[in-house]
Length: 418
Image (cartoon, rainbow, N blue to C red; front, side, top):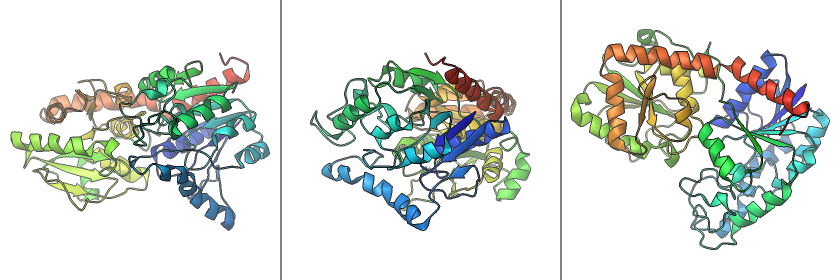
């Protein structure tokens, strides 16, 4: 069995990390698995993309070229929106590799044109890492549900016209994807429900398989040693928060974490706890959390991340929408309890008051309450930590996840895609 994964990048985002890990996991269980990307930045031999200089230059320009239609919408929100209009030659690369299955991941930023999926002429599995596949162009719809109909009057575009760019993109998708041999996989039940409710995927087979991780890398490390390695204090409770662009991406919830920690600091934690932030440097207009904050910037390897998770007393995930919540699963694999809002992807990761705490959605008061609850009792924390690791071992271990995908591949190739 030959599987070809398509993902725009091989690094730099949650989708790239998840796709690369799965590619590696499939290799480990004997599947001939390769990943094709628009722009290759790493040295993984199982990843292919943009080798000649001219092709690399073109690959770097494609995200900007794909955004040109958005210039017609000056009031649009500064969040990712992908028209997917650029011609591509991905189908040529697919034909050269001649896979049995084409496995799509995050294919935006000018990598794959909407109309190109029919040219692949292979059974397609599409693991969704956000909502773009079933919307009129936005990747995170927030509270908009117009994807259940035909999009149009798109709030992301700042548009009030029904026949706007989002409607046109939806129309292109419904026409181009009719009759595809397509199976959709989502990493969470919440995203599966969103996809099923959409007008594009309401008749498509949808399965739920979580993102996997290597639990021999993401594993508990002695907390004192981890803090010594990172020069972090031994006498404080450490609250960890982080993601790519953690302080600037509104969806990551930094604006909701800020008032929660201010509340926490006013209830006796000001001098007992510190916030550790990774994924961003300190913003120019930094928030006064009423407690000490350390900004570590971007961490570029999994071992450093595992040490940081182990150094923390808890990980907080205040995101508004998460397709899964990969950082939460990584933290739990390291024995670090997670506090998150009880909505979207984290519902599949955190069991309330068993391995973490699920706060009332988007209420900083309850987020603060959950953080305090997870830290204030040492025996309770030990139980949370043990159960966090147990869940990661049972549900997120990479080989288990890869085997679930291999079983799905075999079923589809045997004609079982119903």
